[in-house]
Length: 119
Image (cartoon, rainbow, N blue to C red; front, side):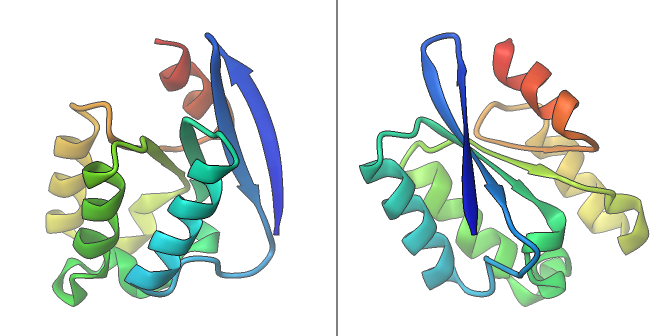
């Protein structure tokens, strides 16, 4: 795992770069959150390919558990990927509602993630 640092509007943003799955469990989310927080990061970008596919099946509650921790500790998270492949109305609704806020956003590209972070 590599962390690419972006400095935008006086915020230090970590972009996780990896070919492996980084988030499998709530504990993985807490570890990532804690490690990046203590390194001074204000926000995190992670790619959908680095998250276990079960995360995107809301019935597993993995997404809710992990995202609750990021929200609770006020660490904004942006997930970059193509979410249309999951073909789930509940996931689409969840993404739509999440994107109304600033704590957790789902975007299609890195450039879109950077644009969200500059607003």
